[in-house]
Image (cartoon, rainbow, N blue to C red; front, side, top):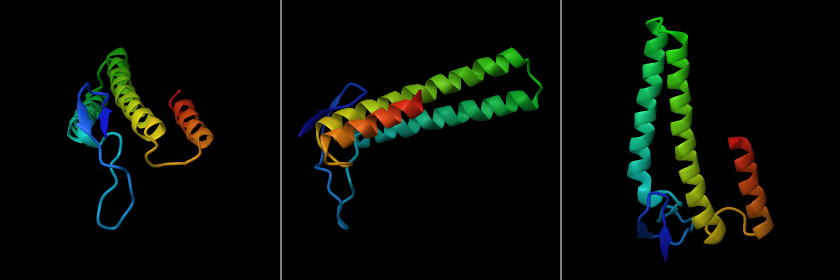
Length: 114
């Protein structure tokens, strides 16, 4: 089955099954390396904010960097949410089997993001 990924390329996704032999394919599996790279970059930004505080930098500059970190994390979360909606909700892979439960789960995570 071919799926869309939030990074703009297509991939072939394995059917999500849980077994001792085969790992579970998640909606972000195809872009996992990009996701980890982006998270590493965000981790560096957070270390930079800590260094700014340690160096007694101007408050507004620190707050500006915190806002940038939050925006970067939000972008990652939206990409994961997009992948989840396409792979797990629409594709029916993983999570609850009842469509109403899937929507409730999705709305719960959106509520936590907001």
